[in-house]
Amino acid sequence: MVRPKTWWTFPSWAITPNKTFFGLGQNKAHTFNISKYVGIRDDFQMKKWLYPDSNLNYHKIELLICNIESLESQILEAEIRWTTQSTGREVDFMQWKKFEDTQQAIKKIFKDSYIKVEKNVKNEKDEVPKSEWEKIEERAVFHHLGGNRFMLERRRIDEEGDGDIPTLNTNK
Image 1 (cartoon, rainbow, N blue to C red):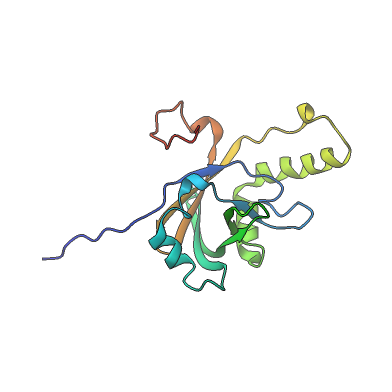
Image 2 (image 1 turned 60 degrees about the vertical axis):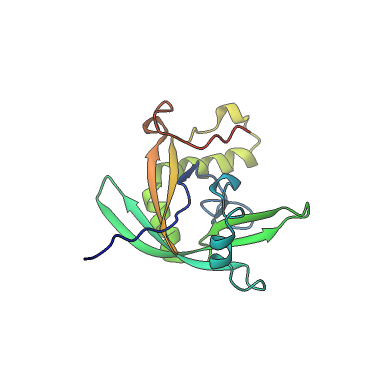
């Protein structure tokens, strides 16, 4: 008899795409800070698995990018890395600066947000008041599928519901 197998995953999280996410900032980073509420720093086993060598501060991952509307998906490369800030706090990031295919797939799935962020970068340079900037109406939602595989999907902010999905209390 085949027994079911289970494994640990991190909770899902969502961010609003911004200039750093799209590589439109000064460093062209293609990255974002993973919230401390995801728990990478708190889970000793997962942290040890992601960063087995204390001299190596990154781990290559597979990023399944799903376009729900067109029913397309691709498995592409990205990395999770950590750094210690000047305050001594350890922070985890997801990044894809080295992976051109991943950058293009993200730009394609978040086309509307990319155009708006690009305009807002210009608005920032032109010192346009933030109240006049383009409003981003999409969220990048990340799901850990287990091991080194994560999934990214695009959701409209109005699809997130009015608190009907159980979430971690991050208002501490």
